[in-house]
Length: 552
Image (tube, rainbow, N blue to C red; front, side, top):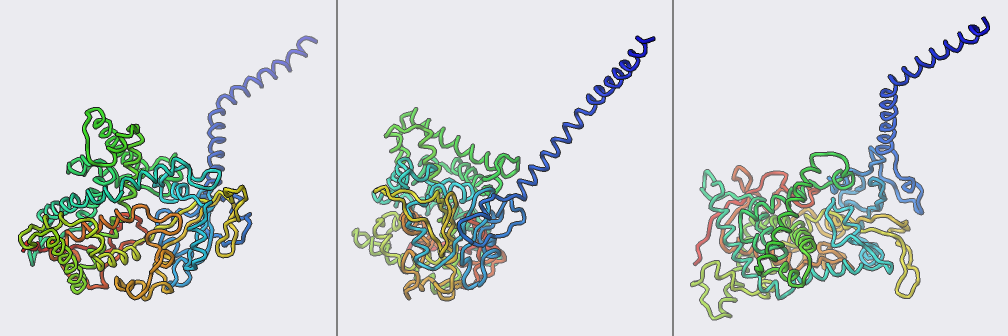
């Protein structure tokens, strides 16, 4: 009896525990799912809505730009930079992007600065603690800068970055530019002839109607490949086309998500990776093949091969050189032709300069200009003659840069470093505000280039404004960079534009029209979306109606 009284509760307890264990086995997957869901929800909330603490706890009181998702930050800064700054910063349309503000960019603190104040511009341009390469690595939509190591302990460029910059300078040395000038002219003559022949024709005039993005852009890509890359691609149209496809697939799919959140599956990232992989495989395979075959080419890649560099290092230089040679020059040069084609008087002035230069060059060589073909007239002009004899064309290029340079000058600030004497440099101060360590600084060129304080009637295309004294220094016209970071490739960029535009204008008469073959007036040429950093597709269609000129 006693034994039964003790046993019964034990049996009930065992039975109860049994059921509990079985229930826990059943509930375990649901519980795991619930916990995972809660964890993901918390992570998502943090990702979207929780900005870094130091955004609001800083050494200054710089205004903070509001964001729809404070945790992600200024997503629009990557994809629509000009529009974003117009909306968030601009108070007076005559002075776009003026002032200072800061924002979060997925955990990174970024300061925007817009100003025509030379002291402020010098503070950014000449501060040795500001890193060009680290700034571009994050802020140039995933496009890598010259190097990724940034500053050394002394606040200067590290040895690897200096080496890369020296290589870039050697690749576009005066001797190489002089040697390649006639080759570029020949490339341009052949390319334009082919494109005009296969372009659609005007239904009324039967003239060719060419799309600059499908003609001028590939030519500049070919120039850059020949100068900075692998010359075998520049002479093989099918391979060049594939290389160009991979390049633009990579660059046109760069943005906030592919740069800062690359672990998130997304169509743009897949396209970007496909483009990058194709570009890398093609370039590296060509370098290795050339080394294995012992074949030599006249390009800077050959110089690097001769110096014993690895195929990987050479490939990185080639791809970086293409980025440097193509992105900013390609759209600004195309728009030079668009604006000139809309103004008959300007077109005559520029064409007369080109013909006069070619005639004087022929006379200097003891040749009869009228007996030469257009290709001979162009390919026999020296680099020095091209650079010194086309004043109006270069003013047009300068004005095109003023309109279209709408990206940002990007820097990373690690904080004050020590100078060569061991003394800590003063902290960076912009528009009266000290900038904390580990922050990014972006300067908007549009705050200078589109400002009514710097340029009269800034939205009017007027290449002769520079002859009236506007934009005379690197701090009143920031188109080629300033301070420690002026454009390394300025001479090659100008040469690319000269060879493409001068060749086209000597060989053809043309008018800028819309897709209905209706001419644009001098101030009617449609601009691209100014947030497009590289491709620069016009907001309304632009075509050039082209008639070939005879070589007489």
